[in-house]
Length: 350
Ligand SMILES: NC(=O)c1ccc[n+]([C@@H]2O[C@H](COP(=O)([O-])OP(=O)(O)OC[C@H]3O[C@@H](n4cnc5c(N)ncnc54)[C@H](OP(=O)(O)O)[C@@H]3O)[C@@H](O)[C@H]2O)c1
Image 1 (cartoon, rainbow, N blue to C red):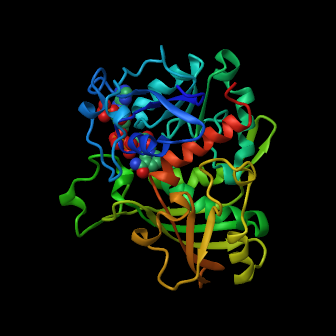
Image 2 (image 1 turned 90 degrees about the vertical axis):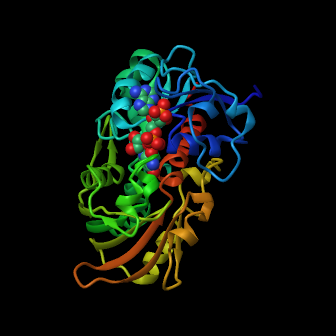
């Protein structure tokens, strides 16, 4: 090991787990020391356990690394978790109780009162909840979560406007990539040439998580933001990148140039601390009439920026626009990595 912080990946063989491996290769602060998955994969080498999905090569030292069983004994302090929610509900508390700092992608604990649901650019201050979290008090371990992959793009676009003008109502219709369903995910015969107007539990997650993320810290709890969200979630035949059509009603009137400058100038603690995974510009407004598009724009800001376009007046509310974010980077592994970096920078990992 090289002086870097050793980290583990729980659920290392899945879509998000593989993204973690890709993003952690050559990371300046963290180094993969441990990987675990289900009994199906445990005790195999990583190449035997799963099929590598990315075009960048699987690092040789990872390919040869043994996949551990999903038990906390022998795991490092910092764990990036990419488990499906049934497994996360059972396993993440065991790791937290054993003293691990679990940075979770799953929905299992996002809405639990003492669990921070964090996008560093939006609500890094919510990490304060850890001080009263039951696992933290008992073992020093804890669980921090990042949001649902469609909530994150929406909230990054809303946060600068909520701060400046107040957001009262949101209507959002999503077009979500197939990689958001994990691997192997949706059957090709179901999705090719098709749109599926249903993603189980996605709409309630978007609606509830948006209020918690934009909410304010009040001592040991979060007061949800006072806004109403109506979400329509659709699965489309796109590989990576969730696109969302959004209409908003604001509490105070705003001109188009004020909205655009709010997005383009939005910066926060992640940029101030120069965290390695923080994009220089978290929200990018692209004035080109037919952008953003998943194929052309998902890698902007290293896949960590939300790209907004098509701002125009709305006949029902005040304004409407399109936002795009990378679901497995900004919406999952990159989001968790940025949370891990914020935790380290703020001394939560000692
Ligand atoms: N895909 C996205 O864009 C996205 C975005 C945001 C959040 N998320 C969330 O991130 C989590 C992972 O998603 P994914 O898309 O990567 O799913 P996935 O491709 O299905 O991968 C699931 C991972 O969990 C492991 N696992 C399953 N059951 C287990 C058990 N009982 N014990 C230990 N490990 C177990 C699997 O190991 P085996 O290979 O051994 O079965 C695999 O490594 C989910 O909660 C998902 O909702 C996903």
